[in-house]
Amino acid sequence: MRIRRHVRPERTPNPRRRRLLRDVTIVAVVALLGFAAGTLWLSPVPVVASSGTVPRLIGLELDAARRELSALGYRAGIADAREHASARRGTVIAQDPPPGVAMPAGGAVSVTPSAGPATAPVPDLVGLDAALAERILAAAGLRVGDIDSVADRGQDLGVVLGTRPSAGAGRRAGDQVDLIINGRER
Image 1 (cartoon, rainbow, N blue to C red):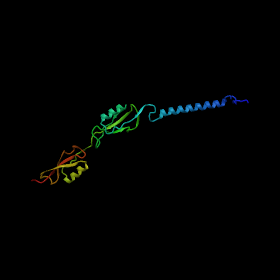
Image 2: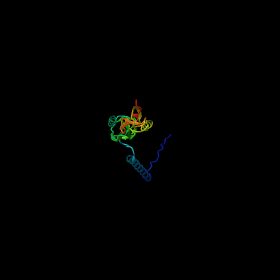
Image 3: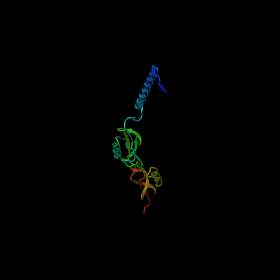
Image 4: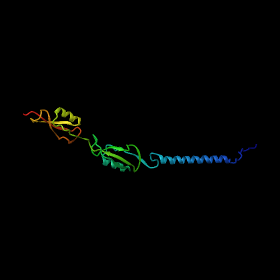
């Protein structure tokens, strides 16, 4: 018995097929390179540069926020201070970009410190009835403190003669203002 080996006849390469394969490969490489270049150039976030996330700075003291940013490789930009009802002076009350945003090292983070609680000027209450003066103080965000009576025959009874502190002085919201009213002689 004889064993025959079946061997495929050797094929000669088809020049058309080889050119088609070459052309498809060139088009694929050019498309891939174009996509990579476009992504690197047009991407809104860095693709290659090392980046981290912006930390939460709100509530920290300004110096602590600066130290934390410099430790992470970011620059701190300080915006103008704004009044805040509950934050102490020098505490960070806003930041841009917000926490958790990816940003490359060396980027700037703008922080806004608090200028402290807002102050309200003491309204001029001289010559007003005591009840009306109390309502005006409440509307200004202030409270009535001690009420002292002084006798003044030139004014009606129950009229405000003055305030402590005097009109125009700045007070934080919720602070007390003492009233001096015209009372009866003893």
